[in-house]
Image (cartoon, rainbow, N blue to C red):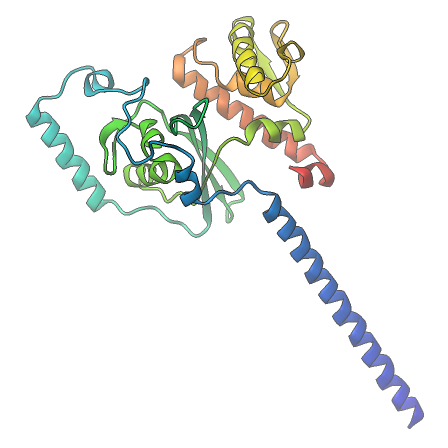
Length: 286
């Protein structure tokens, strides 16, 4: 009887230890997850809209476009009505793609220096994470694409953010491209690259010349000494966050905005490569 009691006691102790370990593991997971959530720079749509003085108005930006700029000719009233009818038909007939295995994030770069306006979204990359295929894909949305912005009308795609910040940009992308966007992000590129210890990029001498102008501007905005960031000459080098973003902003070398979007994707690919080689501590800090 005593032997049976000892076995029962040992079993209870073992079960108690297992329960404690499970609770400890759950607590650790919760703690890490909650820590990530608290450290993220999440902003609600409502708060994002409050940040700018003219959101909700039809903003005529310096970089705005009219039908002549976008299509090469001024549309007649009849042609405009035909175009509007086709857009309306497309909007009604095509469903929004929403795959439960795919998480879509819109990466946004905004041409803004202060909060007097929301700014044109001159860089837009739709990044799709496919859980089932374990695959990441990137599609650049060209800023000059002529689209129908809900409540505003026909404009360049980059004007959606200028007129309604992130929420209107997401609605515009969803309605015109029929892709459900789950989240959008901006303002994080420089800091993430610095956390990764920089990324490796190859620049030509012409790209160095233009990038250094952007470095001057960004350092002045951040109250940093640009001399610590300037490129000396072209070649392959490990670039800091400011240097990499300056490279990604280059539009006046090569094939204009098409090549700029290529540079942006190159930077993100370099970041992904760096993450794959990083340890747990670095990934955790990112």
